[in-house]
Image 1: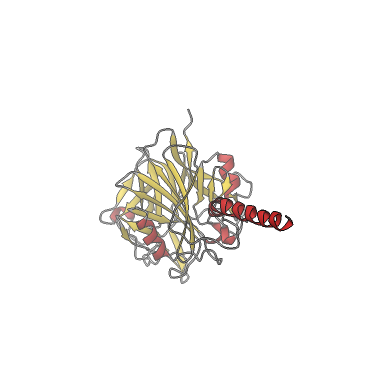
Image 2: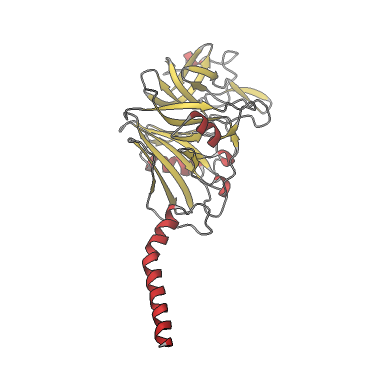
Length: 327
């Protein structure tokens, strides 16, 4: 009798494990952030956004690379895209703090910034609700000489049209250029050519929101990581955590993308790999943003990705998010 009872207990335990196994496996996939081993899969794991027209999902690509992507239908009623900044006296705080304060549904970090100066200045064009908070960069110093730059940016026109292109400043006007400068010209408005002199340049009208970063990743569906022309940082062939913004002009969708990196669970991407990934997602135009330890994805106030393999978030000055329109 004792043997039968012992055998019955073992059978019941085995059945319990078999029944629970699918649930545990599904739970591990859904909450695998922070576990010792992570699944390598090509399946998207959808995350609830809470609103129609906004989809968010995670995926672990071969590499491995952990990615978080959000798709917004730009025609979705009751939603809008806005840039926002830290209200902290230092000019920067964790993206989770500033996104919560702004009441963003989703948010990613955006601008490069001066990490040594307080309050923190951003390095690129910034427009928030029609107010220009930072101008496009006129020039940068390379080899002890200033050279003109036409850094890439994403902006939303008064009409609601979202664009990604190379931007230059001329007085109070902002110009969209058909291609970036070669990165060797003297500064604008000095001895060099003016943006209005560039063939194909178009003056940008009133803008509601703008995010300046770089380099451009895609233009009209073609990969164009113009790091050299925009006189960006070194390391175009090095894998890093990345943040990117994209638009699909054919379907009217906008994308927010974060790729984790610098840890065993996710190695990060090069700029060329990021451009290819944005194209695979359906983007026709895409912009690289600040990456490394800054790359952060916030969903409904919660951290979704794993910055540098953990949960410690770098203080950043700005973000771009999706918001409910004020009624």
